Image 1 (cartoon, helix red, strand yellow):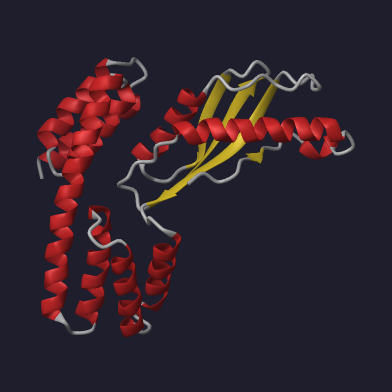
Image 2 (cartoon, one colour):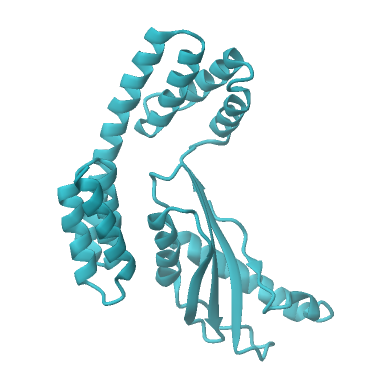
Length: 256
């Protein structure tokens, strides 16, 4: 999901309030810009609830001049994915002829969730609000959420939630069964992600695509292939300090 863009203080939209034509022109421009980013935004599917805000500058000719993260999701792959989406979306449209501005600085928020439907989202939110308050009601809601997406391997985390609720209610057998099901679905989910990430990396051959592949291997606990993938990412760009730091983290984790 993409939040609507908001203008930074460098672009004072209010100063043009008296110029209706200019307001309409930039409104159309921002709609077009958002649509372009939406087409390239491919949020990492392993982040349950990510939120990153990016500040970026566009020239009057539509070129992406600069982009930096001003509010991190605390997940390096998710953050990197937001910058990758902007790079793929550029160049944007040229500015409306009615403005003499040379550049525009925009604050944009990317967010996502692996909750697949609005109904499921409500059930999960309700369940979370009742956990440790009224676990029986929490269980009723999480059961409804699971029924909403029955059979979807993406729902592995719901079984993990239900396992904890059942354990709190004293249902040890049910909790263990749900924990096993959660692990089974997650293993299938991890392998699906690896297969997809590997295919994309081989097709795009970009630093980010191999960074994403490395992270996919890491989540599955395959540090040998994760290190191979991040080495490939490092070899594809000179701007690789973040990738080198990530490689050092992988090295440390692989020894544990």
